[in-house]
Image (cartoon, rainbow, N blue to C red; front, top):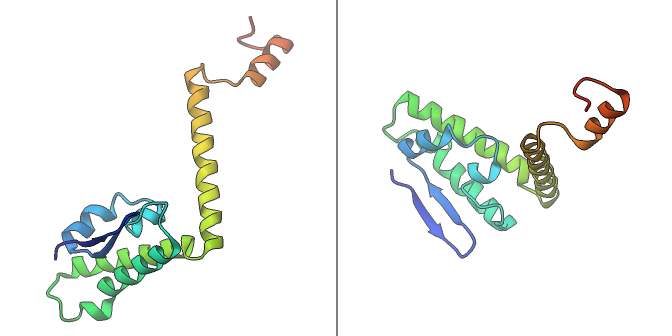
Length: 140
């Protein structure tokens, strides 16, 4: 089947996903629950719930009985369904979502700080000053 999406002002809700799209997307989703659910990070809680229900409805094993799909495709859909459930567990409630978003922001901040350190030579000022004071390796 072809991906059918309903667009709203803030996001796109994926309501069905065929085996080809599933295979293409499942390898690149990583741990981002928003990507797994086919949403943008600014989606509402209602959008998150709707997306989860739509995806579970299309990929649930009981709904796949009459479909003519291979065992490989069936296994892939089961893996995707598990990923949807894990993603919803991370951002399904406002408290869980706030916790996830805070952790995501902290990780992005750490990554930016690490990039800045790499750009200015790899060491932070504190360590550079300490090496100079103690006459350690690399001190000028």
